[in-house]
Image (cartoon, rainbow, N blue to C red; front, top):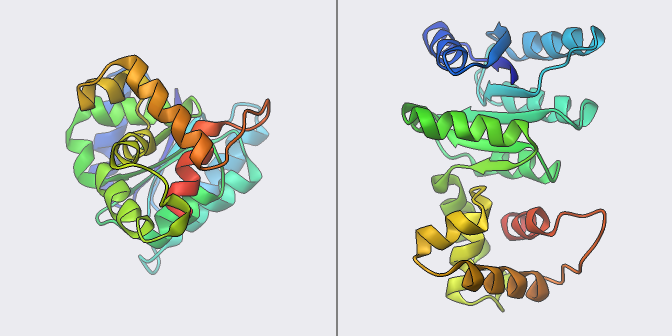
Length: 219
């Protein structure tokens, strides 16, 4: 992968760079603020060698509020194929929802504690770079907790909610089956029922799995 890292902590930025480099990936730029992130991606795109994914802190200089996620949203609007994985110290529902709602592919939101699990973090970056999703379980738990109050999801069974929560973390059907200790066929049946209950008909252009997750998180 070709990766751009945006993190104002030099220690963490260098650590992520080394971590990815040691696993065969190329960090093509490392910056410390949101404007530098946008500039770096635009410069790389102009040379015909855009990055595959951006890893960005939610809060960055100068105000340390939402500069990072705002830059991420801007970049996804301009470069739809760019994967964006944002890191945050805490679960911030507004930012997570805004990022996820902006596109149906190549997005991730992880808590910084998740970086401590190197294999899980690298797998998440790879998944986002390839167009998948990677949502921290704590982010999913908070967003789904809010979503349970909404009528649009009232028809889902408790097991279907569990399956959809794991889907929102970016897990495959096989991974869901392993987590819930059920058969692959059982998971496929639950997923099919979720699509039906959320009114997601088969389509050549829409990814129903992602649309189901977006419906769940944005309801």
